[in-house]
Image (cartoon, rainbow, N blue to C red; front, side):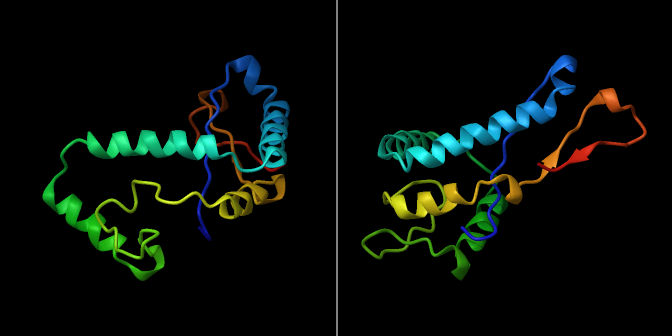
Amino acid sequence: WAGALFRVDVTLTLAGLDKWPRVLGLLHRYLGLVQSAGPQKWVFDELSAINAMSYRFQEEKEASEVVEELAAAMLPQFQLKTPEGGSEVLRGGLLYFEWAPEEVALVADSLIPGNCRVEILSAAFGRDGAAEEGSA
């Protein structure tokens, strides 16, 4: 998972835009609650079921797009293997195979204010391309 991005999008009203530091603080407090609760198997089970359904009923893609995705999935750094050791190039990037609470905890523990990048984009800043960027 090294180098992975975790993204959260928050849509604010104009009044909320003025309070973005508070909203960001609340988000970090929530992430702290998630960390303190520890990995939850039921979350894994729900996401696994959702991804299995998405995989089963995915829309068709152009052949060239499928080939590109499969070629990237075969790169060694992705290590798409089943718990039994078999290769899972076709399904590996879409399905969850194994509950690994220690890996979940490792990722959750890295979700701290010092590791985040905050981008605030709004039409309220005008059309000159100027955007406010902050870090908490």
